[in-house]
Length: 516
Image (cartoon, rainbow, N blue to C red; front, side, top):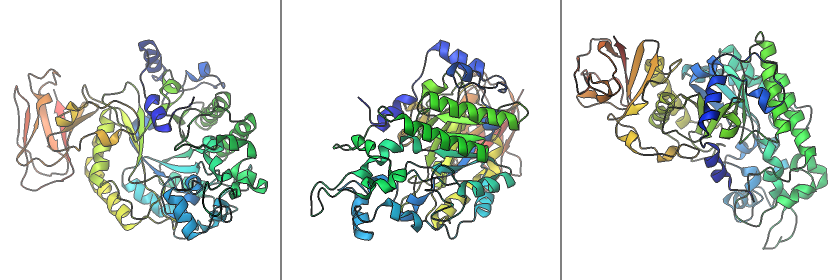
């Protein structure tokens, strides 16, 4: 029996045996140069490229036809579930889904104010080192000029190559470029489009997904076995036919061949075993051909077993870790919902920075989604959040980019709260304050991030001369963003740094420390 998606993804981040971990660490010590075969044994030779380990921060555009409705996540699925808020909205706004279906909404996506070059310049200024375009969501609508489906953004909706335009803008700004795919689970996810109301005047009248002339969007009638009578559904590939798996691989190969992404994200675990292995090995081999035989591409999976001995980078959806990871990993999250929703309450810039610093201190990257509305133009609140991130990164990013973890990730009240490493746990981490410190290193330099503005002095107990961390004697200290000298003292109990009269930041400050 399958499991709930949230429960599954919590499990995906679980740990593995010491033997598996040691094999994984060994596999990460040099750049990949293998001509990969479509086998797990071959993919054990994969190494995480340095650009990803150095990048630390990426921005994602989780944007497509569902964003045109501006009513949040999974609209294409939920509009076919009687009783859901999106079903009610759809009936009131557009009509009953037996008459007006998702196929009729894709042309509502106009992107009339979308300027990828301008947005990319903002993302670069905010400190992003890679950018990820959604390639295709579970709605089965490709955002490029796909040769395997008419349901794509060049033929419908904005009538533009969304992936291609994002890629051009990213490369011109010196960012690595990636794509995300969520479509592998579409065969189950979109089965709701074949169902019908259970009560009311149109009870039993099938929704438009049942019409065979639109099977190339909604899937064939065989998917109807996945229509669930219960709340929720199973994120499980069992029962999905080989014909869909082959079609999936063809489309992903087309996406890789056209755009040669440096980064490729699958929503969940590596799909469909042999088909997924062919996709990933092709991604890595295409990258090696472009980079003198060295694989520069990154593939992420949410299944720890996929990444335990090579193969890929472990991704935790809206997830944080309670410890330093032996290898680079990633947390992907959003300032609000994944798809744009009017009136959504967003994360603050402070919350994003807290997450970023905490994740980086534990050897991770943060991939942050800014959901675009129908127009393709960030709303006012999103611009304010992005500007807040930009201002902080302008001063403090030297302790983020190209950094590595220290002996411990941090100290303070937040480190006393046990959080089970996994997915969907970012809300369980306490908000960081001036009592919380996170550490990174770069060469001989130690960075101590104090996650707030101390009233009079910052105290870092882990840097005391008698600390268990045996940090050594501090020979120089600077406060990033402050031009004058700083008064500080290191004794047995810790490091004490007097704050200047002029406040550098309410969000958090960075101490650049040179040790003997």
